[in-house]
Image (cartoon, rainbow, N blue to C red):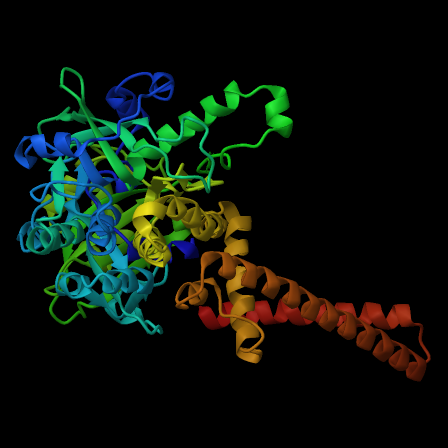
Length: 609
């Protein structure tokens, strides 16, 4: 379908994408204990200065000013933000670290590792647009990221059935901020390197740990706006990989000795694992279950409900990643795209480096025989020869065999956390765990980085932050919850299935382009143009597009009404001049238009032959 032109603009992976790395089975395996028991009656865990000083950092602290759960781009940028912006919130020893980042998996290779060029299909790619770039610039790390990325200046596209080099159409990107492409793990490696070189005295990175909340510090009924309450109490368990390869998806905490950690401020940025978000959801269900009918109807709730809206994926696509190297005479700063006849598959490729090494995706339906593991390499080669011949000649038999052998990876389903993005006065969740979208338009990772920037601005705006830290979490909800909902709803609206879904995608693009050219000060650009506008939230984009649709409908209805009235008057004039009834004249006009349409169709077929 035409809307899958955009699929390759975001990522490329050998294994499942980040939003599908943690399966429900994995979550069940790694759950420390029954979540109902977690939120019963946790004792206050206010640490003392003596306790903090008695445990040297090398043996493991039991208290931090801030804990970040999730070592992805949003998690590491959150740690950098906290190191830069957050004042000391407790009396830690001079040798103690103020911020700790926990992640379940091992750290990725450093950004200068050759594996990002030699094994390109293993690492899925991100397109960093203006939202992500502005956030990275805000924390003075953009220059480091830019050095590790590749600029994409436009796209080279082949229509279905067109496979010659000269058949391709090159469209240069018309936007103020050039998208930069790099592997997601490479971005993590850059941010990790920044932490190790600039903030090693403040931030501690701990890999291979599962974190489960024991108490959010608000179990005593503290409401939003009250004091922050006691520190958040966490159970931290070593997490043992369930497989021996270096790209594990699951780990187990069984037979590992957990320890308790407390913190003044908790950020959940663990993406699809959603450990903190899941705990918040469970806690909210338990809290509301314990309230009687009178309390539910008339009592004051301590905070807004926490609900996760999960959409069933009714327009599924899966993908296989393909390493490919383009010839020297092909530009290496373009996104390459092609669609097969009948919309069976889409081929998208983005640069892994500036030397012509690309990571391509073959997007298919889940039930396609080519999407299965160990499909016939000859069938796959034949498909490429007949649908993507321009790329088939660049793929060796070893690549085709490897692609045929591996199974397809799935795309994440749409999901958002509604109501609030915080728990009590000390916990915030951000990134993919609160707004999960398919990576067609580069919005997921960029919005996650933007979340960190907005949280930072909130922290900066609060006077005497050490005493008033409890004001930050509800303010973050106020500024981001509606935007997360709008982001997911906009993205899902673009991804509707079938012919009707395609029309709902294509028709608005056509109407927006037409009306924006006629009256640019009144009508906004199409949805993709709106995405490129800086300083415009997703809530504002959604509101603007609704207003545009209303005004477009009024203009079109008025125009059709005027045309109808004009035709009716003209028919009466002709009928009167010819001395015929208006019914006969209308029939004659209709017949003439039908004959003209048939004749035009036949002429078009002759010209094409």
